[in-house]
Length: 359
Image (cartoon, rainbow, N blue to C red):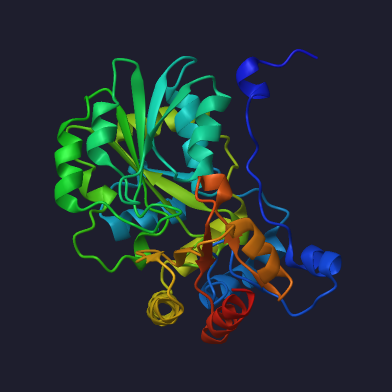
């Protein structure tokens, strides 16, 4: 079997095991999962209600154009429906961007560490990932601008950044935007934008009408609690959207995902409760981790990056045996760190208790 070199060299994304499998392997029960930045409140109740009412129509294909969902998103964002491309999670929008606009040998500038799928998808099409190290655990826009070359076709900025939880400011972003060539696509990944408290944080759709090719990625997986449905979207110029719609498969987002996302958009009470729960959880953990004496990065997301000042993977294993699942950060280049997702108050207290015990 002949496999292209750029495919053979790929390192696969390693997802966490299901809770049930971990409990079986370790002989434990009652575990809590604080590893995947999921919504601690569960899914939007309005989404669940709408999905239950739609089950009788599962014999029908979904709306291949996502007409109603794109229309509602357009209303909320004050853009045209045609500026929006739906995806099977925002992951698929990344893949569609790569498949539509990159050729073998092209360069894509991205922060490192950041969302691991940028590098994987870029290299899967034979393009080159130009990774720019973070500065003080934040995206280094100045260094990223300096890394843009004549071969650069795309730039990724994860804002807030995963796994550090930091943001770039509006002033820094706008200075960076001025340095982006007009034929380079700037992708702003805003998977965690709903959790941001810092008012200096820019938002991608505000730059849709700029003279640069700005694409914003959003998802229903985090704040709306619909990770299992895989539904996200991109906001971009009509010319970019038109080309991506030619590449996108017609039924890439399933009917229940579209219906659930549409209902979730109007579930303001749930969104507010989710954001408040996350903010309260962060404030609680700041105080507790301060008392323990461990460094951490103040976060604008629904997770916290903590330096446990020892082998993070080893501590992760010890936490597992206490039924608390977090994320070791060795794959991101932070071997002494863990990342913990905000849970419900009792879950956050259990995390702290387990952390103190294993330390």
